[in-house]
Structures are given as C-alpha cells and as structure tokens.
Length: 280
Image (cartoon, rainbow, N blue to C red):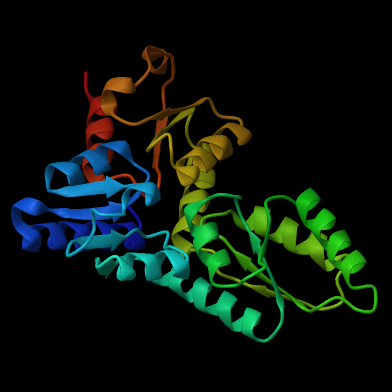
C-alpha cells in the first residue's frame, strides 16, 4: 500500500510548482511530508523547506507550498503579506476539518480536537477556531471536561469534537466517550481519514498470518510510529526501517515476514524493502 492520496497530491503539486519555477525552485513551510527520503527527493528537484522563523525576507515573489497538514490562517496571511505566491497542498480532508472547526467556533461552540498536541494538522485546525482545546487521551479529555464545567457552572457551552485525521478509531472513540461522560451537549465529527483505518485494518489481518512485521516509513511520522506500535501490540516482533539497508539481521530467524508502510512512504522505498526481503 503506497502513500495516501493527500500525500501523493502534495508531492505532485510541489514537484509541478518546482518544475514551473525553474532554477530558483520553490519553498515549503516545514517538511512537506514526514519521510526523510521523500524530502531529499523533493530537495533534489528544487523543493526546499523553510521553518516559520526563516520566511521573512526570503519568500517575496517565491512560491511557497503549504503541506498536506495545513497551516493556521494567521500564518497563511503572514505569507501573503510577505509577498509569497501560495500553492495550497493541504489535504482536502484536513481542509474540511478546518472549515468545520471555524463554523462551530463562529456559532459559539467550544471546539475540542482529538489528537496530538503540537502536530502540524492539529495546530492548523486549532488556528481556525480561537480557543480550541486538544485532548490526546481519555484522561486528558476527562480533565478538559471537568475544566469546562468549572468555568461555566450555569451550563457549559456545547462542544464539538473534531479528530486529527490520522489518529486511530480506538483512540478517537475513547476520547469521545470520556467527554460524553461529563458533557451535556457534544457533537462528534467523524474526520478520520479512511486511509489510516485501511492501513490499520490491513495490518491487523496481516499480523494473523505472519511471524514478524517490517514497517517502512519515516521515524518522524506519527502515522508510521502508530503502525509499529500496533504491530507490537498484536504480539508480533516488529521493526521500523526507512530504507532496505536498515533491515535487521534477526529477520532471518522468522519464516513469514509481513510488510506494512506509513501513509507518507514513497512506493519506491516500499518496493526496495520488499525486494530485499524476497532476495537471497
């Protein structure tokens, strides 16, 4: 299973923008995707990453590709004010979450995001809903609900729960249930990407048929790390590798080896690891 559609779209848009820009290339705000090898390929094609602190004086008249995770609106406005030509490669599902968050906030609802604090997608969604809160676990959700009740003893505002697109169904449902225990009005938006669920479902089926599992993907990818943790939770020895050269020698001790890949892993890298596993 290769990269998800949102990641492929972002890569294609960045490559196309770089080809049109010529020798001066284009910028992305942070790494376009969480895979070091793919980022290196982009850099070779003229797609260079900039941190938020590096954009002043460097983006005027230049194309800046917004990554699949999206950005908060104030950062987008800052880029525009600095004269950047924005290429929006935000995943359509993330864009939908941003719009939902903004709509709920405009109605006076409290927006809660089920996801990882500091993750680019979560930060971008929160920027569209001033005062949004983040819950990364059922425990955090219960503490958050208690806080909302204390702050509004006469009746807390209605709460809208929006999921980071790459969390698992189990994580989301546990957070939703924890909030639902204490809040009188909760609307839960199902914004989990089917690509994430499909990978986890396929991994669960794979684990029942193999002796060990190799996950291919970037170590800086939360999605890939979640696949590795799931494989191990299913009782299978599992390793995370970014390239075929990282395959551990102890794999020789296992007869049937399963292969899984993160949502941002290029198909080329998956094929190389597969070939190495099948080789002599």
